[in-house]
Image (cartoon, rainbow, N blue to C red; front, side, top):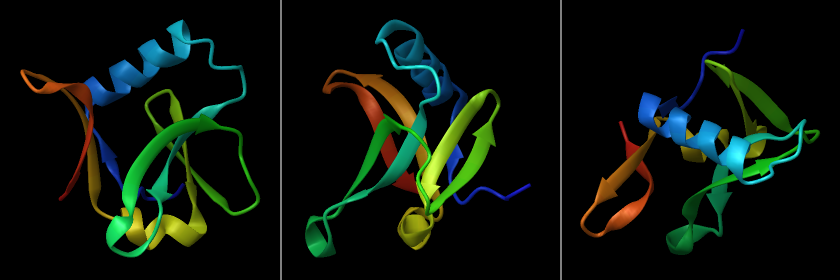
Length: 96
């Protein structure tokens, strides 16, 4: 069992479940956490994908999470949450 480099709040997990159930995510797909871009323009990303050769797999309750081993150092210590505020709704990423 791998110790996860990230944390996901119960609210974020519930929203991922809703998306998987209601948005037609194919069976066999898992939640992918990673970074997009590089340098000062890098940003965190969430998506749904199938396992690739360099992936590390983690389990959060009933959700499988894929993280590319080459991106582990960039996501280490990230807390993924889901917020509904006056500014909008969506997933948030914060360093712990």
